[in-house]
Every structure is written in C-alpha cells, then in structure tokens.
Length: 635
Image (cartoon, rainbow, N blue to C red; front, side):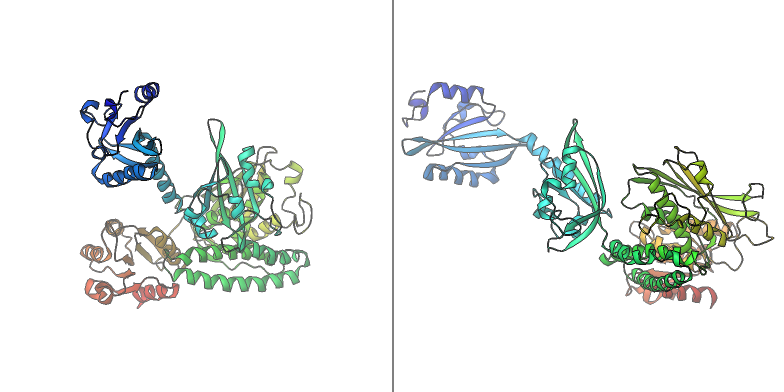
C-alpha cells in the first residue's frame, strides 16, 4: 500500500497484514483518518454500495441515525486519547452488528482508527429467545406453590421463581451468577457448618442422581434459618449434566408441630389418660383451625396472607388427624358425623401425606359420588394412615392410585355390613406387597412389622382404621400379592340410605338447591364447600351465560333452583346484574343475591331495583353468607 492509498498521511501498513484482514476476515474492516473519513474498506456494509464509492466519505454516516452521536464520540476518543471502544447497533433487514474501534498509531500519535464490524445477528436472536424463554418460565413458575431455582453446570444460580425470591429474601438480580451454597444452603439442621464438598444439592451436578430430603435448612438474606423439604433433579443435554433444578418449600410449621406432637405419640399406650389428653389437644386444635378458616374466608384469595393461612390450616389439620389416633383408640372417640362430599378431602389428605415423597398419586374421583355421613377428622386419619403405609411400601418410589365409586352391596360379598348403597374407596400401591401370614393379622391391635417405638411403629395404625370404619357403619379390607403391591378397600354407607329405604340417591323436599356463579375458580371452590356445609345442594357457573342455561334446564326438568348467588363483574362474560334480568325473564319468581368486591357499586347499594333480594360484599364471612341465604330462603 503506497502513501496515496492511505490518503496522503504517510502511514505505511504491511501488505500481508492487510491481505489477511481485508481478504479473509468474515468481518467488515474500515480504516478511518483523523477527519473521520474512510480511507479503506474491505467490503461495503450495506447492499447496493461499493467499497470504491465509500472511500473518502464520512465513516459516521455508515451508522444508523440513533447511533451516530455515540459513534462520533468513540472515534474522537480514539484519536484524542488513544482509547479503544465498541458500539452495538441494528442494521436494515433485522440484523445486528458489533463495531470495535481500535487506534492505529504512528509513533506516539494515533493517525488512523480501524473499525471492525462483526455480524452478531444470530447471537442477538439467541439472547432475545433466551430472554423470552426465561420470561415464560418465570411467568409459569410464579403461579406454582413450590419455590424453585436452577443451577448451571458450574453451580451458579441461573433462574429463580418469585416464590423462591419471597422465601429467601433475595431477588433474581441479586442471585444471578452467585453460588447457592455460599448464600443460603451452607449449614446442617443442627446448626453446624455444611462444607461445600458435602453439599448434597451440589453433588447432583457430579453424580446425576436426584436428591430428595425433608431435613434440610436454608438461610434467608436476613440470616434467619428455616427448615425445607427439597427435591433436586439433574438436567442433561447430550448425555452430560448441564444444570440442576431444585424445588423446595418452607416446612417450619410442620416441623414445629412434629416436635410438639412427638410427646403426644408416646401416650398411645396409656389408654384412657392418652384419650383424655388427645381430646383436650384436639379441642385446642379445632378452635385454632376454626379461627384460621374464618380468617381465610374473610380476605381475598389474591391476598398474600391467604396462602399462608391455608398452609397453616393444612398443618393444623395434620396435627388434628394425629390426635384422632389417640382419641379413637381410647374409650372415647365416637365420631361426630355430618353429611358431606369427601372427594376433595380424599385428594387433599393423600396429597398432603405424600408431600416431599417420591411417590406419585393418581386419582379417579367421579363427580357423582354419594354423600356420606362421617366424622371428617377420623376419615382423614384413615386416609392418612393408609397413604403413609403405601409410601413406606414404596421406598424407591412408585404410584399410589386412589379410586372411588358408588356401589350397591347385596350381602353376597362376604362383608360384615348391612345391604345398601355405599361409597367404595380403593387405595392401591405398587410396592412390595404383604406376605400372606402378615395379611391375616394387619388389623390386630399392636401388631406391626415395624420396630416398636414412638419413632417406628406402635401397631395401632391399621387397627385404628378398622375401629373408625366400624364406628361409621362401614368396613376396611385388604388384598395383596407379595411382590406386586397392595390394595385397601373402604366401604362407607351412603348418606341418603336410611334403614328400610329404597337405595339410590334422592334429594328430599327440605333440601334447597343453590346456583352459584363466579368467574374466579378459587372463590367458586371455597364458596361451594361452605354452601354444601350448610346442607344445600349447589351447582356452579363461571359466567352469566352458563348460569342462565343451567337455570333454564333445571326449570324445564322441574328441578328449579331455590336461589342464585351471582358475581357482579365477570370479565369477558355476562355479569350478575344482566344475568338476573335474563333469569327473571325466564322465571319471574327467581330469587337472587348479588355479590361483589365493589361495595359502593349502585347495584350493591340499591340491589332491589336490579331484581335482587339481597346483597353480600366480598370478602364475606361464613356466618354472613349463612344469614343471607337463610333470610332469602326462609323469611
């Protein structure tokens, strides 16, 4: 290259270097003089241009308008202070370039600048895709009940969902790229230091084996320690461990209750005294549970405290179920029955009892299951005992199948119960099974295949189940093939079945029928349970259109609803005020209650003008709903 080719500035650049840079580089290379003019370029940056026509033009003009000021500043800094710099900018046709500016010195003076423009379009697309993927993952996991975080192959945090942020006190921005062990998993349950090399969650990256534990502790940002149940699983790519995903939950309440109830467990063998203690303890738990239940229904389901109250309620129910073991097997323990649907109770109890286990639950619970008259706490105890037994029978994991069906017993089945309609529940595990000689004795008091003791087994679990089922007029049976799993069958009398009556479900004239409409599934779930608890039949609708259709069908079938409860505001659907107008066109005698979180709404304030007989503002207490319905139905 001669001096003329370099713009007359007398800078000589070695020809072999120029050839390498200009002829073989995948990047665009531009040489710029101190006037910011292009003196040489290996290829044009945009289609339709030529290298020859660009020589002598302003280099800054090759940048998009929004980047020119910054590009000019970087070039000036290069010439005046000898500083290198870089700028990233978009180009036409949805592309991206990263331009590096490097000073070229002649002696101590920067005579020229070299701009190296690299195409980073694919990298930008990958980054955008990664950000979108992370956003979707965060959106999805933000609605999970479990806290979750991901470690990359080096053991650094690459993702954390909002539940984990809340429990630990750190934000994802604070945690990104940090070592989880250094921050929050660095001590043992007894408070002693957990060495990094012994960290079981980190070891998943080394051995590729899932780690499951209910005996770990994490440290919050403020230094407080809390117990957690943990499941850490490896993520593999091309046969190599690329990351781990860890799900955990705060089990502080459960641990606290376990410590308190361990004292009660030791009293199982002392008969009447144990029964008296369990009775008093259960009364206390019941009072606490009642207050928490009312509190949880007095706030919006979106409130932060709502989930905490529900968790506390579940933990207290577990403690109450344990106390029922003592009470039922002592001289007391007669069931306090009420008519109820137990499908949700089955699902909740089994799920809670399997919490933290490597056992999956599969449910088959039809919607038309018979109502039963039971002591809810005692039946929960039966389900919990059987679930825990199934979990112990599958130490390496497996599946627990829970099925329920309506059956008619005729006395030919060989079961020690009266003929009639029953609810049949089956819990079937895929465990090791029960040996034939053991199967004959499993319901005997104080018979156990476990080591005896408070921490192992008292031999009372299945005998208590047998006692509870007998007091409910039902029966429990077991079947097993050793090595192939076991099944426990529960038979509970249907609630509508009275002695001498014809079998088959029917609704008595005194039983009222309610239609409840609300677009929020959490509200629907809570309120229908309350309405059922009042002794009413209930059907649900999500929107006004569905409510009108259900009301029309019931009226045609001569099974009209006695009352409707309608939500005022339904996004994307017909609200309560319009729905009530439609219902009164179908049935001028339709009676309804309007419900809304907007207490100052005109419909709420002057509900009678809109065709309603009552109004109830969200959030409402159990007694408020009971009073509103009673006034509508009986006054």
